Amino acid sequence: GADDAITIMADFTADSQKGDITFNDNINDGKGQDITLFAKGAGPGGDITVQGIGNSTPVGNVDIDGRTVTLGGVIQAASNRNITVDSDQDLDVDNDVTTSGDGFIRLTADSDASGKGDLNIAKNAAVTVQTATGDVTLEGENITMGNGAGNNLTVNTGGGDVKITANLE
Image (cartoon, rainbow, N blue to C red; front, side, top):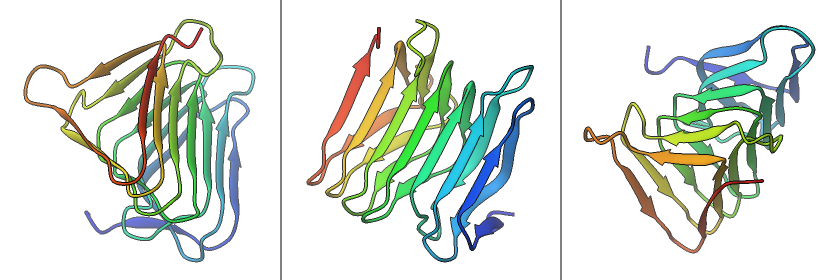
């Protein structure tokens, strides 16, 4: 249901050498622990799907690195916590991206600079990018915001900046 969550009570690393990593519920954090998800080993796979990060309970520092990454739920960085998501190929974001303090969020498609990797924001749902004092950085070979059918991107800045950069070559 909507309140379901995966709660991590210790530093957590998932390193998939051949497969995908999927979290079907929000990732929450019981004690501010660090979370690392890595899926870029040899062979098929390398896709990472996460429903949400820090939606109801702030998480520690989060580092996600995969071939293709899909973020379906709210991404929220708490004060002094950073969320970094790198995708060699496409990165899809279909929910809000917020900093609630001075932590930062960096979402990068085409992190390997191969020229293949688009950042798609609000493709299937409306998205708000909002900063408190922390910054949000959005990067990709191409960046598509919204889909022209009412799924819009809204940017609200507090004391932090929102930086959007296309063509990472």
